[in-house]
Length: 78
Image 1: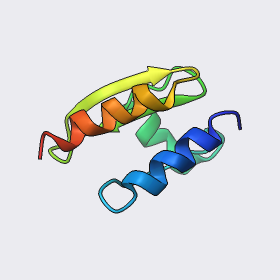
Image 2 (image 1 turned 180 degrees about the vertical axis):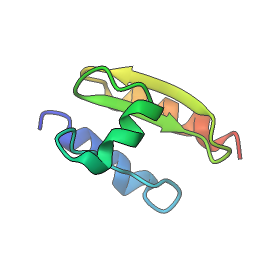
Image 3 (image 1 turned 120 degrees about the horizontal axis):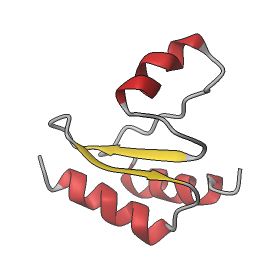
């Protein structure tokens, strides 16, 4: 929950350009994405460019500025 304010802020700023998804690691429907993006622990943030390239995969607490830079890098790959 500690990351929720950061993610909410990013979603407000980039929500019209980026799809934000949260996975529940206990649900079977999340297993495919967890394998695809090499899930290793919570929280994990995977930034995927529109072309499908993984721009960043970060584990643990992240700053707003770090995640914002990752999102901007992904958007630059349009």
